[in-house]
Amino acid sequence: EDGADISGEHKISREDFVVGRILGEGFFGEVHDGVYKSPTGERIRVAIKTCKDCSADVKEKFLSEADLMKNLDHPHIVCLIGVIEADPVWIVMELYEHGELGNYLIENQYSLSTATLVLYCLQICKALAYLEGLNMVHRDIAVRNVLVASPECVKLGDFGLSRYVDEQEYYKASVSRLPIKWMAPESINFRRFTTASDVWMFGVCVWEIFSMAQQPFFWLENGQVITQLETGVRLHKPQLCPPIVYSLLTRCWAYEPSGRPSFGELACSLSDIHRMEVEL
Ligand code: ADP
Image (cartoon, rainbow, N blue to C red; front, top):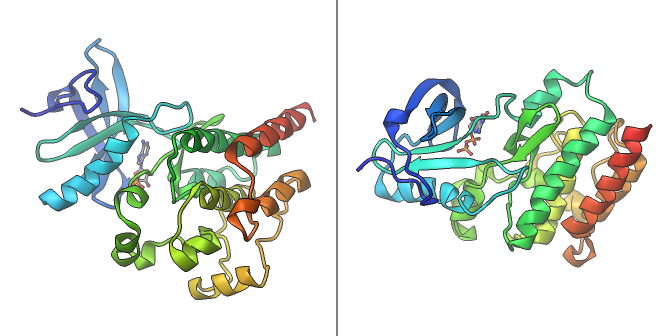
């Protein structure tokens, strides 16, 4: 049999899809856009992730992202529609037509207000506070892993790479893909990933947002980053970043994990800051 929805609520079947153009290249294979005709007859635009060399081993890893996502339900987390487990394996998600936040920031850099940028930070922070409540760590928080659903709504995605592999394998599998410039010191030094290291990465992601998707530490080699961090060097305040937001970032970048704020606290602060920016 062909389509079985992992959530168990409804089955999806390949015949209910029209596959469109290639949206991008994922870690496992191409991602296409498409249209899904739901059991109620509604037509939903979707993104279909495919898996190129899908041996049993790879398939398990590919599907682990969906396995994780099926338990998540949050307005600022990418929404899984279902999985087709028979070859060719598909992971189907809601389509966010404005694409990756990084590219969106570059394309719209002259029209985005400070209030909107704070709103994106707040939405990502709420998604992470939700994960914090589930004791889940994301491990790859960056603007390349956030999708833009509408000019007022972003969604945290990419639960794949970081979650299915144990840390040893993560390191070995893809040294070049390790996001060193986003990582907390204890993640770089000991490959230790916790909610506190997610908080550090969130700080770097906020820095990217106010820098209009510049690469953090682009002036350094990966190998130089840890030395800099250990001498106390941190990313500078981006020009567009309000000082009150930057003071939160410096707290996210406390060397000791226990010195960093929680996502709950950050969400409260960002919510206050957003309200103030809207009133300005
Ligand atoms: P992987 O995590 O496997 O490397 P990605 O999630 O980064 O794959 O997907 C590859 C590309 O497909 C991304 O650059 C993104 O632009 C696009 N994409 C993925 N999911 C969606 C989606 N739900 N809506 C719109 N575009 C998407």
